[in-house]
Length: 237
Image 1 (spheres, rainbow, N blue to C red):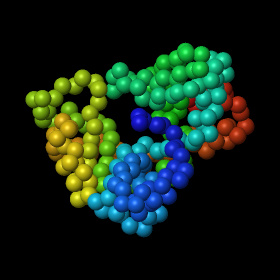
Image 2: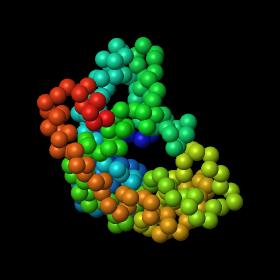
Image 3: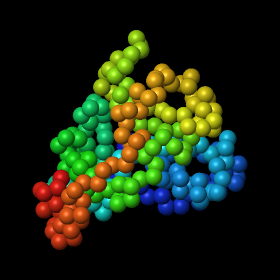
C-alpha cells in the first residue's frame, strides 16, 4: 500500500497468480503498465472475469541500488537503522511528507521539495534507461483500469459537491469491459464523477509521452561509478 518510488520486486508473483487462476480463484493485480503487460505475456491469456488488472500513471522506476545507498546514507547520518520508509504521507497532497522511521524510535520527516531522494527522482537521473523510451505512456492501455493523480480536475466545471481539501483526487480510466464490470461492482462504495475525457487527460503527461531523459543522465552514472554517495547527493539531488 502507498506510493513506492523505487522499482518493485516481482519475485514469484506471476507464478503465484497463475497457480491461483488455475485453482479458480479471482485475482486483482496492480502495478506499472509494463508489469501488467509482462503478466499477460507470461499467462498467454487474459482470464477475463477472473483476473483484473490495474496500472498506474508511471513517471518511471528508479534504480533499487540508489535507494539502498540512500537508506545507508540515512543510517549513517542518524546512527540508526531504517525500519520503515513512507515515500508519500499525505497531510496534504500538494506538499506531502517523506518519513523515515528508525529502530531507535526516531523519525526523519521531510517534504517532496526538501527530501533529497524525491528531488533526485523527480529530476529523473536514476530511472531505468528503458523508462525514457516507454511503450506504455499513451492511451492504448494494456490493463483493465488505470489510476493516477487527477492533475486537471478543477480546471473545468466543478461539481457542487466538490471541496478542494488538498487530500488529492484520483483519476480512473476504464479501459476494458472487464474493468467496467469491476467498477460497476465497486461504484456504490465510491464518490465519483464523469469528467470530459480530453480535458481530463491533457495535463497527465504519462498518457502522452515518456519521461524525458535529462541531459545529465550519462554524467550522473559516470560520477556514480567514481564518487561516494555524499558527492552524488551534493551534486545531483
